[in-house]
Image (cartoon, rainbow, N blue to C red; front, side, top):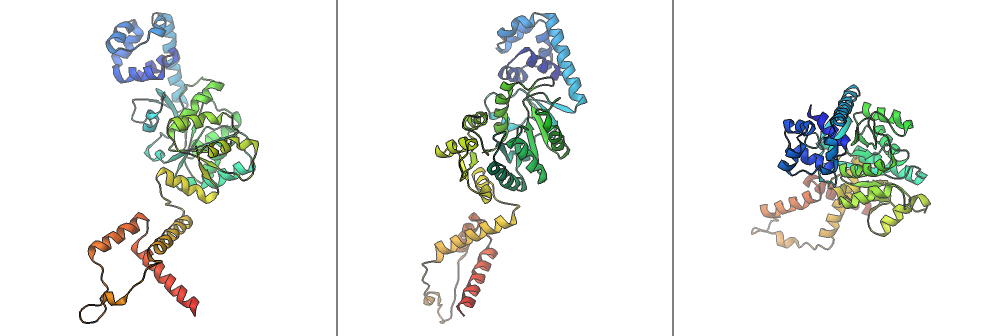
Length: 384
C-alpha cells in the first residue's frame, strides 16, 4: 500500500533525495498523513523540506487525483509484471545507492538485479557503429559473456542493441536500462529484442513509471544508471561530441574504469575513442584477447576460457622460470651430505614460500614441474 504514496510523491515532483529521506524516516501512518493535511507537522518533525510543493499538499482534489494516478500505475504494473522497487527494499541494487542522485524508485521487468550482477560491464557507444566497432563488440562482449559478465546497456540502436544480442547469442545475462516507462519500448524496432531479453532471464529497468514518454533529457539521466550499475564501462565507438560522452562523464564521476578499442584506422565515428586514449582516460583494447585486460582491471581471473587460461599459465610459468633460473649456477657439491651421497633437500619454510610464489601466479606445483620436465625432454630431444 505504501508504494502508492511513494509513487504519488514522485508524480507530485518530489526529488529523489527528498523521497529517499521520506522513505527512511516516515512510518506508513505518517506517510498517509502527508496526504491528509498534516504535512507541515511532519515537515517540522523530521526536518524535511517540501515547501516548493506545499500548495499542492493543500489542494485536496489535486492529491486525490494524484493518488488515483499512482493506484492506476500499480494496477498496470501488476498487469505487465512490473515490480516496484523502493530505495529501502532489499532488492534495490547496492551499487546504485553509491551514485549521485540514485533513483528513489526503480521499475523492474524480469529478474531482480542480484549479487552475481556485480560482475558486470556497461557497453555504450554510437547508434551507427563502423565495421570495426561491430567486430569489436563481437570479439569483446562474447568473451566477457563467456566469463559470466552481465552486460548492461540501453537498448538503443547500434552499439547498445548489438551488445545485448551478442550477449544473448552466447547464453549470457543482460540488463537494459530504459529512459521511459516499461509499458513501451523505444525504439519500437527493438521490441523483439526486449522480449528476447526477458525470455532469456534478463532484465528491463527504468526509474520512470508507466506512461512516461521517451523524452530526450531522460536519456541523459538514464546514463548515470547504466554506468552506476556496472563495475566498468566499455565505450565501443562514438563521435567526440556524441551523447555517449554523458555516460563517460558519469563513469568518471563514479570512479568507474573505462575501456575502449584502439582502432588502427581513423574514422569520424571513433573521435571519442581517440580523445579518451590520448588523454589516458581509458584503457586501450587492441584485440580480441585484450578482454583479459578488463578482467585484470576489475579484479577477476579468466575462469571459463581454457585456451586463454592455458596461454596465461604458460606465460606465467615461462616468466617465472626465466626470471628465477636463467642465471642460476648449481654446484652439485653443495648438496652432498656427510657420507658423500647427494642429499638435495628443501626445508619446509622454503617449500611454503615456493608454493606461495606459484599461487600468486595462479600456477600449481604439478603444472610448474610438468612444464620443466617437458621442456628438459624437448630440449634434449632437439639436441639429438
